[in-house]
Length: 460
Image: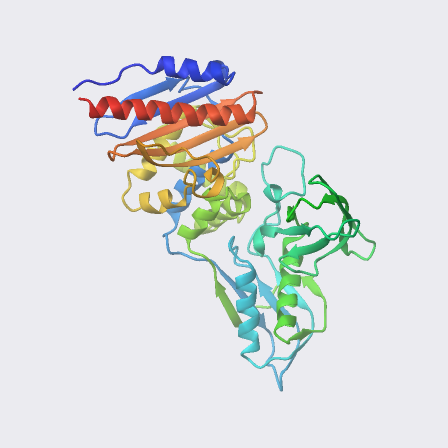
């Protein structure tokens, strides 16, 4: 059998084309044949920052600690018995650390209370987030921002602790229309955006907290008529209060009035469960984690791993357990540092060779492989690879986890050829080159090398 033996010219050509320094790169492409064949090896033992491909490691640990069908629950409890449609006392919303809890969950809980013929709750809505330690950020190594990717975590979380603001241009010279999704009284939006000619975006958002405690998002500037709709996302400062306000809002939609305020507290031991919502399965949560690279899901699942092991419910404890699992994989001593399950730390570092060992440990397990592979973005189809069409006449699909931070661009996954052969790959770049060029380099190198290998294989 004749094998293609040297793709170094392909590597050099693509690197020069996109102005990529080989010294800033670690790359490995290996066939998944019974006798694996290395097609590309560039600095494969060099430690590199991982960014969000760290979630491959987190996924491995989640799958080894939970069944694919396991779920986390959110509950509502009461301390007294409702009479005549009125409940006198505080209503308790208790977080079970479900990363998937969102609008559907809130609607479900509100509907279950409506089924009990409750019309009025004469008391406060108390949010119990005591399952997790009160640490909103853990081992994130950059300044805090109010964007979705830096959202806080909590045992009682709702809609990934973030919201969208949709801005639609109005008639020329008039104010644009603003809409908050999901609707919630937690934060008030005040907008004065003038609709102008063209398609320029001059929207500015600034958050402030009033002396009353009310948070206000001031949205101002201009938006061109050429926009059908412009949207941006913000995180919230208190996941628990945000969740409580959401339940209060949905209860109101069901005709149930809460006379008191949303507060933080702990449900009494004798409180009775009156409504429960089971969240998405672990398999579905991994899709949220990997396809959309959701950092809240990563850190909350790491916390759930700590709870599973009867440890303190924190991200750092979950990370310690994940590191223990990594030690059991016999990776070279000192070759990996894992600090944050979402990859939000430049100190998360290892080599391309180690990443393929970790990837192989998951995909070689017949029980884990289907769930893990289904969670990955598919090129040209969904997630973070939706706009990167890597398929060609010789390639059936590319599934991979991507990562991006300042001066870090990574990609780890698998590609399947039209003849059924599969190749594992790990690309890591730590440098100051153009982000777009690095991604184009990855895509072109992967497609060209795999295509040539398949053509050579077919000709033998």
